[in-house]
Length: 238
Ligand SMILES: Nc1ncnc2c1ncn2[C@@H]1O[C@H](COP(=O)(O)OP(=O)(O)OP(=O)(O)O)[C@@H](O)[C@H]1O
Ligand SMILES: [Mg+2]
Image 1 (tube, rainbow, N blue to C red):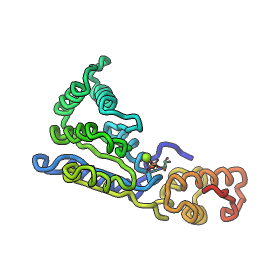
Image 2: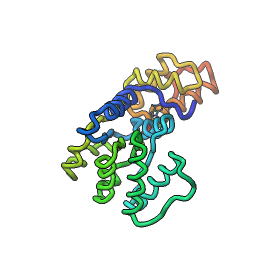
Image 3: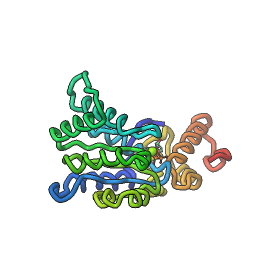
Image 4: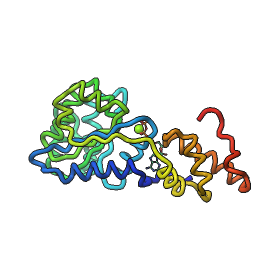
């Protein structure tokens, strides 16, 4: 299997359109805030982290233990690295760290920040507020990445926040066309329709599961090239 690919499946194309929409927005009228969300295993993190790497966006991932202070400190570190501002990263109060971040973002108005696992911020008013300040006070684009019900949750937590969000996109389950595309790009065996059908029939539209099936099929085929794909046992756990 070839690692670290970002195959141009439908969800990838749609999310790219989201970023384009925010980039082309009338900046004095609209803030650069968007939310992508969806069920597990559909490729949200893969998109967010790989596109950030490819295009020089800042990728942040919240954790269960994230606090406003840890976020401010991580963001400042990421901004210092991204814009090569030196080895010495200032420390201080949460408020001061955010001020440093805002100053750097004002100086770099084309910045895009992707914040994965945004659901962890939903219980921290201050953290959500700080992210809101970034889009209110600078031209930065912030793309939030959340779980299946992130949109509904955000609407329930803070109407003003929800109102600022200028683009929503829900990741969809993957269909056979996307599976064909991914399988052909990542598998190290020839991918015919029997392979695509087998993956599609067992992955329930979930890419994480599809990758596991590809790995099993590839291993079996490499061991025995004459094996009939339909007969390969995928195990009960899929
Ligand atoms: N566009 C893509 N190209 C190639 N592989 C992909 C792509 N999208 C997803 N994958 C594969 O599918 C796996 C699952 O995707 P990912 O972890 O990004 O899902 P997720 O939507 O973030 O799930 P969760 O909600 O559980 O965090 C990845 O580990 C990766 O191997
Ligand atoms: Mg994820």
